[in-house]
Image 1 (cartoon, rainbow, N blue to C red):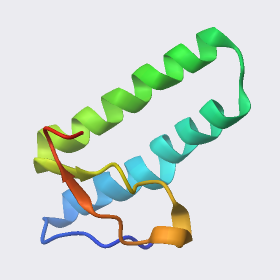
Image 2: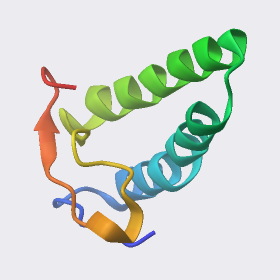
Image 3: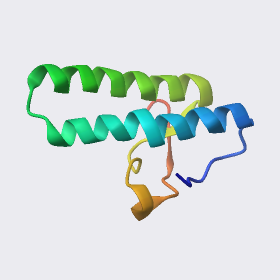
Length: 83
């Protein structure tokens, strides 16, 4: 994943890329494909936790424009309060 990142230490860039290219993309796929309420609930909790990790460590996070892949490789960073 090639996303625009603000000036952050490399360890945070690795975290952000792992969350967005890994966990959050997987969660998006599960929510799009499953109708099982238990799976949707668990995935929603994990998705919220991943965004919480981002905000706790970077104050802001791509959220409203996130997870659009190559359609938007440079999503805007929303404030932690918005997320």
